[in-house]
Amino acid sequence: MASQFLRWLSQAPPIEPEVFEVYRVTRAFYAEKQQRDELEAYYVWYQETAKRHQQEHQKMQGDVNFFRFFRLN
Image (cartoon, rainbow, N blue to C red):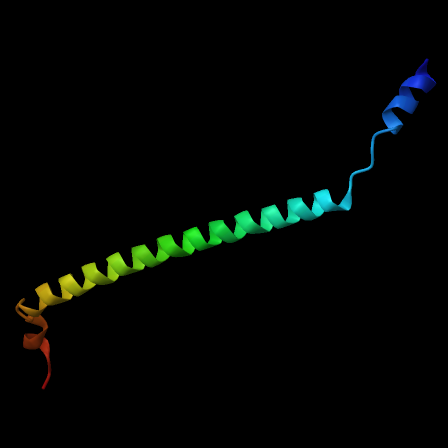
């Protein structure tokens, strides 16, 4: 009885190499998509940060420069 059970387990059909190729291509595709999505999110963050810094710089242009009083020249 045990030999019949082992024979039943060992007769699993072999996995075709194409299955592994499809898995590899699918995994590579989703990894590439995730990387591009992260890069796009970084670009959006960078543009927003640069715009905010430009606005802060424009605002600072009108401020009084207190460090001018401490210069040695």
